[in-house]
Amino acid sequence: EKVLTQSPATLSVSPGERVTLSCRASQSVSSSLAWYQLKRGQAPRLLIYDASTRATGIPARFSGSGSGTEFTLTISSLQSEDFAVYYCHQYNNWPRTFGQGTKVQIK
Amino acid sequence: QVQLVQSGAEVKKPGASVRVSCEASGYAFTTYGITWVRQAPGQGLEWLGWISTYDGDTNYAQKFQGRVTMTTDTSTSTAYMELRSLTSDDTAVYCCARGTDALDIWGQGTMVTVSS
Image 1: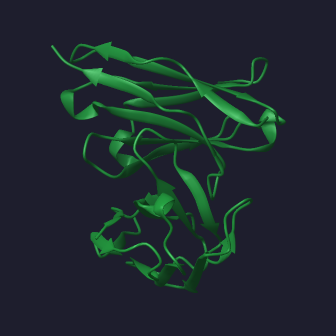
Image 2: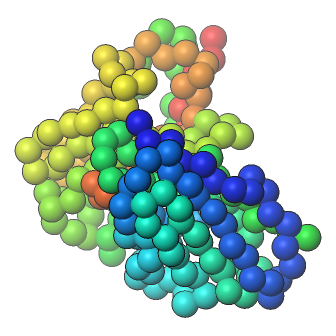
C-alpha cells in the first residue's frame, strides 16, 4: 500500500497569502494524484487530477505540480472560501489511498 | 444535473450490518466506476473500495475484506455498499463517489452510527 504523507497538518494563513501544501508518497505514484477540498457538512470537491490538471470549474488560483513521490498544491492568493481541509489521493495502483489532510485555517 | 444521492442516516447496534445506497442520475451509469470512502469523526478520508458499474468487478481495501460487499443495480443506476459485523469504530460518514481514479462527483454522505 502506498502511504501518502501530507504536511503541514495545519496551516494558519491570512486572506491574500500564497499557500503551498505538500504531499509525499512512500513509493512513486507517477502523476496519478488528485487533490480535494473538504468543508464541514459538504461533499469533497475535486480540485486537481493527474497531479496538475484543474478540474472543471476550479479557479485558476489553484495549481498542482509534481510527479513520482513529491507533490504540491498551491493556492496563489487565499480567499475566504478556501479555508478548509485539503486531501491528496493516489490512484496509481490498488488500493487507492488518501493523505491524512492539511487544515488551512484563518491566522 | 449529474448527481449521486445517498440513502439516509442509520443507527445500528454492534454486530449488525448496514447497507447504504447511492443513486446516480444525469449521466450514463455504466461508464464510470463507483468508489466508496468514509470519514470517521475527527479523522481523515479512508478508501473502502471500488466497483465497476460495467461488469461488477470489485476491489476492496484489505482492512475490509470479508466484511464489505459492493454491488450495483444497473436497472436503477444505484450502487450499494454493505458493511457487516459493525463495531463502534465503523461510526462514520460513508460517501460514494463517481470514478475509478480521480473522483469528480460525490454523494452527500450517509451517517452511520454504531451504538449499543
